[in-house]
Length: 447
Image (cartoon, one colour):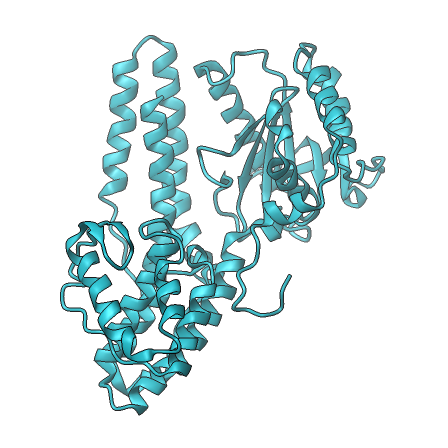
């Protein structure tokens, strides 16, 4: 990876896929061999996973040892459960790789995406999570739970904080299920390799923290130079927020790709053009227009008033270079807390030179958010989800829908107190997790 932090890192799937030399014939042979397998789970799962490791050029599971503590990568890893009454019981993980995943297999024989299949996979997910939480504390909880319907599908669930929070669909509820035929896609094979070999590299917050810290440092230099030029800190902060949002918009598809960054590059040698061209663009963004002269295509309307009064500040070439460097980052991976940091700076002029100092990494925030806010709600959702499936199987679809819809209303009315009252990252991270959960609820309603 390029050591220049202004250079956006490639997507991990792409990075792994670039080194993928799996022969297409081997992939087709694997799919053909397993797509009609209809034996029992116990008869097939170890062979299926062993051949999957061979296909993906992954290390094979090791022979199990008598002392289960030594079994870092093996089939049938024993887990001892300690119960509240002092009794003990044991279970066996189908496939375990320490610090990587707990894998639970089923061979359902049920139609994919049917109610019965969903329920069976949900039970398998719950069982895998129990195993993950039952592992010795010294080993820690793995970042992934994997649920396999032998010969048909692989489901990925992640919990990157490894703090006991909920394992949620990875990368999202619409694409966490990998069908057998999806193995034809290099990016999917790359994702599975990463789960086996370097699961924490899939944590999006790691990239976000790196990019956000770098952006904050560059903006600090730009902010200081604007104040040195005599611009009031509040005006400079408001200007920078608009610049940041415009860079964000071009990377998430609300503006044409690199539209603002290209504008910055085009005026680098003629800085006097920056103010009129940028103000023209921001006026178009404020009102929306069928044709923007700056973009040379339609411009969406950005409501909320951010661009209603949007003066641009004159920039020298070195200041433009700082913004151009910021534009090279992938703003999809920038934590929105950076906007709050700028706002905090504008409201507290005495601290204005500490731009970025109050940015709290997501991992720190999640240590509080997940167990206190998200885990209890996910426990509720698991109970509602199971009850809704039961009602549906009993021929009571209207009652099932009513139950799920009521939970969605409950979720929408959750109020969260920000204990820090700083840049807003606590609230942002909490909201993102709530929206992920709501996405699962809405998907269930739709199905």
